[in-house]
Image (cartoon, rainbow, N blue to C red; front, side):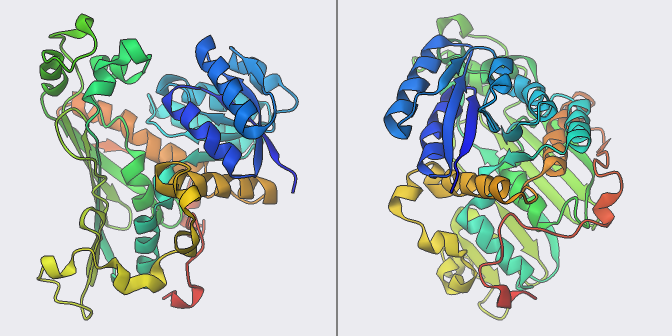
Length: 408
């Protein structure tokens, strides 16, 4: 099997962490690396030599990497502000794109991705790893089999205490600091929204219609900056624009509602709060609950906690067969599965599991939320990035059903 020649642009925390994952898949060879900071490039070159057995070319300017004839596909893991710019340059150069997640800065940015893809046909995938997590895939299988009945409402969150990361932005050269100082929005929606959008067949028989967002006051980072945990004296007492809690409600053409919560600057455990509610039951990742009428007493909380093993037929085979080494290749195995799927789609010439229309719809939440928050929760309307094709496009999950015979 010929390996795909990959260039990696952006070697900060995420990009450098995923270099070993890309190599470990066995499907790709990292032939080029790029970052504005030379120390990151040097570290990446060393890592590729040690783990991949080849010496990649090193670049400071992403355009030079894109122009490298050896590069067939580009993994973009730069700061949020440059995601769209680099993805556009890749598509126009005919280099397949794997785009790390993040929200858009404008609706126009989302349209530019769609237009570039439609004009060039260059493969594009949004690399939303949470779509490949085991509970999300199991829930999708239960939904497709009709076990939850008609889906009515879904909820998700990005609940992750990032105070130290944000406060240390000047030291660790992280883009979140400048964003949290200047913006106020649902800035990271796709971890929780991606799996939900796939379950609700967004852009494939259904679409997002409208949304509202409101933000709480901003106090978390300011208070954190006054403690001895703050690594950067220059931000002591600074005012941050980003609200501590941002709440978003989305309505869908199919009548479903979605609630999202951004919660990254107050003390709390990590959770995505992935929840799917249907007329026959629910799935809730936070307590690993699958509660379905007829199978249990749905009124009882404790008896339904951590009972997903009752539905092993709906656990995806990739999670039944995953090895410990594969689990350790990023976020418990999600990253490994995601890259395997991206490379397989590229190699086989098939449609991307998370395509440009998914990316535009999911990323636009950030831009629309910023407008809604600034207008005190005013309703914002989603563009139809498919140009009406959502009515014709067939539903498609990121992976096949674990057992096709279980389909409704």
